[in-house]
Image 1 (cartoon, one colour):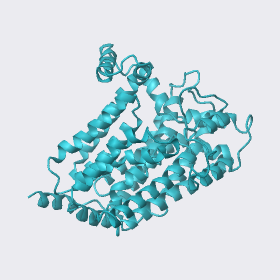
Image 2 (cartoon, helix red, strand yellow):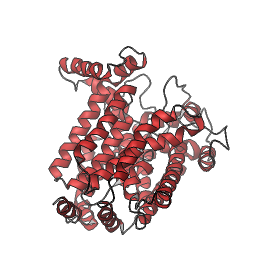
Image 3 (tube, one colour):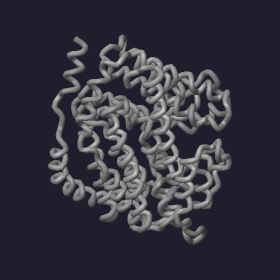
Amino acid sequence: MQSNRSNKRLNISYRDITDIKKDRRYLIPVFFILSLFVTHGWLSAVGLTLFVFLLFRFIVELEYRFPIDTVIVLIASLQWIVGPILAYSGYNTHFKYHMYVDEDTYMHLAVPGCLLFWFGLTLFKNRQEQAIIRSSLRFLKDVPVKYAYVLIGIGIVAPFVGKMLPLYLDFIFCLLEVFKYVGFLFVLFSDHAKRKWWVLGGVYLITCLAALKMAMFHDLILWSLFLGIYLAYYLKISMKTKVLFLVGGFFMIFIIQLVKMQFRSEVWSGAVKGNEISAYRELVSEQMSEGDIFRHNVVETFIFRINQGWIISRIMDYVPIQEPFANGETVKVAIRDALVPRLLNPDKKKAGGQENYTRFTGYELHGTSMGISVLGEGYANYGVTGAWLFMFAVGAIFSFALSQTINYARKYPSLILWLPMIFLQVVKAETEFYVVFNYLIKSLIMVALFIWYARKRLNWTI
């Protein structure tokens, strides 16, 4: 009976890509006209139209594919375009986290840059993607569920083991920690997993507890998104349910941001050690008891958090007046360091963004990390026009990596379930090219080595 239900899910009719093109023909002009009434310039209207269209496209694509590429540019447009539009609309009063150039100047960089990023991401689109996904999942539903439990176990144990090993192995164990989510997806699509939803709930609960323990919520948000994408495909949920989940997700992020800084301060100071759950609950209750949680200062703080544009605009204000264009220097370093392991290059740059952030904004970071983003790095190296071309090239790199990974799933079906791990850093709009490219290369190598070992040494059929 379970197998029949699974087959029904996997063979359900899906919306063809031509339907999206048909919708786009009518919706884009409508979005653009509406955007003109809520923005201060035509470039901002184009940017807002792009975001709304991508959001619509993402919701529709959940029915028949895993839209990693759409997620990448959707998050980018949210943080590079929508956040700045909101800031320019009256939420731009912070002494530091404000826009440093006027709206037309900023959007002249951001909107074409984001559009070309999207065009690059579609350059190598795999036309057989949907057929490959369906074929891979039909194969994986009969894979022994013990594979999933091994992966989950590796992911749970990895962070504890990693703390006891040399620093140059830290990145490897960070990748191994992510294995538990791949195990989650193996369980989800398996026809042989007993108490499936208990196992899935347990993995997600571990993620929530880890986020509270460290007062770091970024991975929780990203993995909620990734796992939600696969759950939406598996369950074939209605359009209304997708929208409700997106609204619920937005509210969850808003609540997290509402108390994050105060909660983090208490956790990192050791004031609530062992009582993180109750401390977090009390902080949320306090905020709720104050009445309107959408009051101006709270909304403004939330916009600060989603607005990556303030850093990009600061770079535009600072470079080349105070700091000359890098002329490709940081990009070359990123490519070189991604291809050479730290063991052979102990002086290689550390991830975190501090160096480039300070260099191109003039601000020092204390006790935190901020990235200048791929768009900001493109401008810091090449100026406005060069940044547009750089964004297209970066999008093309991501598109090629995604297309080829899906193509190899013909031979190695489980690659479909490794996509979130491989592209985890790629979807982060605030991350600079060094971190993104380094993670993408290393994660591809790790996945390839693991699948090779599992097939050749463990006789796994994945």
